[in-house]
Image (cartoon, rainbow, N blue to C red; front, side):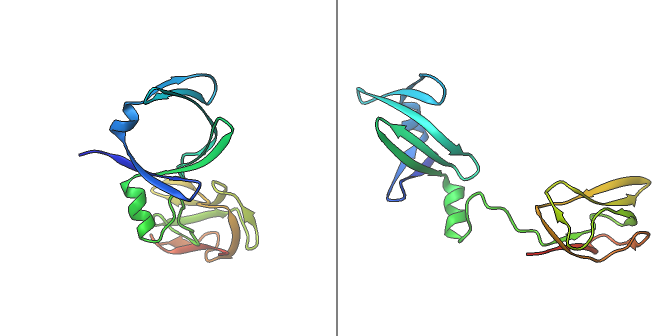
Length: 162
């Protein structure tokens, strides 16, 4: 079974390219982000100006022309057909307790602006103190627990503004 990618160029042209076709290209690095490519006896110099691996979108200059290229595999195509965006994450609007325990400290208040990975609270569980971190950037809307509360797994702890 051949693996292939659907390539979209400048949002106007689409074509399919197989891994086998890509492997037949003669490609040599010609400097930082620049490649010398020989295909069908033609020499091409291509420079990758920018790229986003998450969305698989790249800006490539060939000669004086710049192309915006998006490469999608079969899974990406399925995600797109389902109406979702490739590379987009889920928007987490609430934080639930990952395990039962005791709230030792709450390090944020309603209205606080937090970044992904910021400490929100300390949860004591199984004789260990666990720092519970923010799963996203955002603003704290509501805190549903207080210091000293015993909580159950899955209990709503904090809500974020949408």
